[in-house]
Image 1 (cartoon, rainbow, N blue to C red):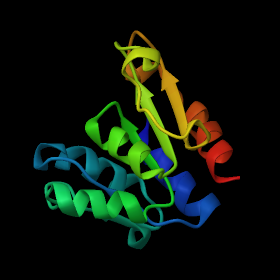
Image 2: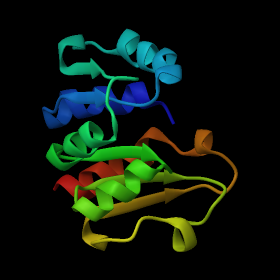
Image 3: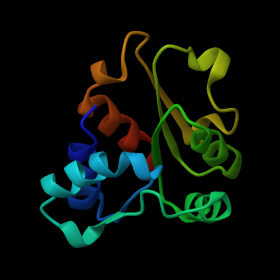
Image 4: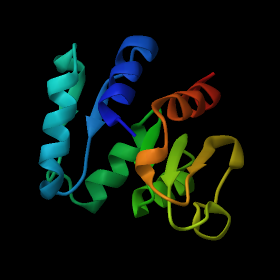
Length: 130
């Protein structure tokens, strides 16, 4: 999946700001997303910045969360924040977030996250936000 294209879609088509989070080691991915962005002022790099309580606060205030299969997806589901949960290796039927199914879109490719298309993610975003 090309997160930069997804971020650009959220900014241009949904009028949202994008907050990039993760551990400090993911700073390079954040830099790639920012390099691609046409409206850099609407995309904020917060990699390596938040502790868990700050991350939970950010998730609870978000319009939508898009994550690879991580604990943050489970937190978003528990908080009923609309969630696009991108998974490979482990089936969402067994390992996916539990919560309001109207607020969770699981996208699954058992081979690789890289085989999940931007359009699949956009379709899930539109389903959750429309």
